[in-house]
Length: 255
Image (cartoon, rainbow, N blue to C red):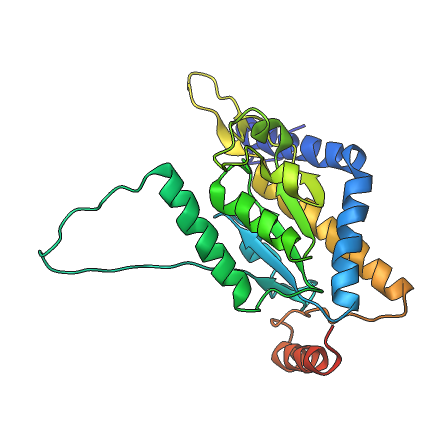
């Protein structure tokens, strides 16, 4: 029975997400536990869990969130060169090899800043998982002894050619792969009389997977006798004070 005021299309959208979340429960419990172990090991040792998202919700969802671990941090990097005036107008196109070389140097420089260190963990979220930057991030992280948890769509990714010169995708180079079950192209809902599919799977499914990882990792830490710092809601009457206290606890304990 439809809820009052809710259209059949909206109901179908919610039902689609319920179906995906249900399939996540049975599809990869081993992967969730493996990812949770990576997170728990890093947090338990006083490390940071860095989250790098290629442009969707995961980079925002897990960091500084109510019920989330203080040890999660958003990883962003980049370089911008600006030249004004008319002395040299128009961009000069780089060859694919030059793009790869420049990206490799930039990511190497990022790790050289020591923001991401041995003892930390890296969560990389990319639905397709085939771009040069995301694969190179994973490769260089693992070369430096930093475990990588990939949040990606295996179905989508394996039907695409990798842009990385190694020919590898994110799902090929990560320590642990969490499959968000997004279909090829990510969008999944078909509407009558409309050619384009709408509504992506990856965001909702990816967030649910990662919160399952956080819950499992927290349970692991508690089982080890470690009480990790967890954010309360800043919107509670005493929320700002509680947040300040838990952040102070994290700075003192390192986890």
